[in-house]
Image (tube, rainbow, N blue to C red):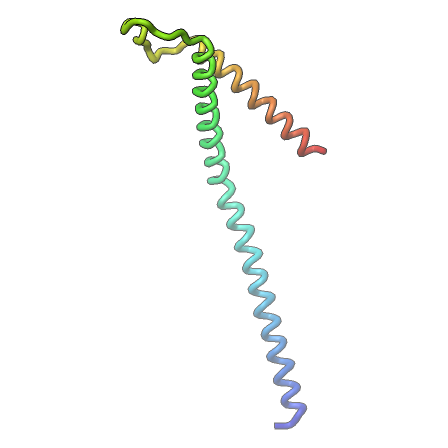
Length: 114
């Protein structure tokens, strides 16, 4: 084999490898953007569910905190009876949690805009 043929073959192999790596990088870029677009919808749905769970958990904890602050030790079996109906304590807990969430959101937006 002549040296010129060897150089020609080596250059052609290098060009083919460059074409393959370029096409692979383009494929990975396309795959990455397609995955991000497809995943974004499910991520947002998941965040809505997690935020709802977080809100409900905070409401229950705040309701329990308010209840425990006002708790008196029951002395009879009739004092132990309670119902699971809507109660002003739950409404107050929801207001406090919403206020806390809004405050955290505004604090986060302020940090993001700095």
